[in-house]
Image 1 (cartoon, rainbow, N blue to C red):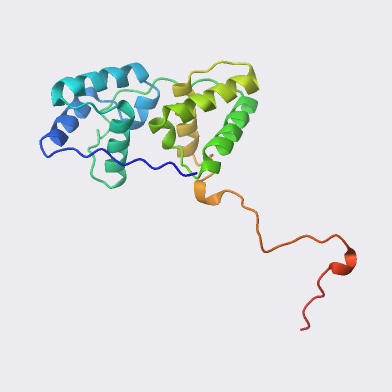
Image 2 (image 1 turned 90 degrees about the vertical axis):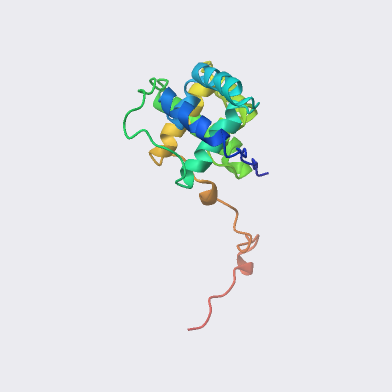
Length: 182
C-alpha cells in the first residue's frame, strides 16, 4: 500500500504570507517534527493570517514539496537551533529502524510520510514502546528517523529486499538444473 498526499494549493496571495511567516519564525521545515508545540502555534498563526484551515501536516508537506523543487526559501544559516534528539541506545536504534522498515518501507512509503501521517508515527511510537518498554513521544522518534535518513542510515523505499520470483527452490537433488554447455 502506498500513501500519497496531494499537496496543498495556495493562491497567489497566500504563498507570500506563508513565506513571510516561515522566515519570521526561523524554524526549518524538518525541525517542526521535533517541535510539535511550535508547529501548533505556527498553524494557529497561519489560520489567523490567511483565513485558511490547513493542518500542520499539510503545511509541512507543502513546504517540503516546494523545497524539493527548489522553490522554497532558505535561511542561509540564520535559523533557530534544533532541539536535541532523544538519546537511544544502539539496540533501541536498531529496534526503531526495524519498526520503521516494517511499517513504512514495506508500505512503499518514504520517511517523509511520518510528518504527514500522524497515525503512522503513532503506530511506530506504540510498537517502539512495546518492544523497548520505553515511552518516547512519536514526534521525537520521527525526528530521530529523519536524522538517520539524512545520514543515509535508513533503508530506501526502492532498495527494500524483494523476493526474486524467477528463482525457485527444489526438493530433490535430481531436480537441480544441469549447467549450460559452454
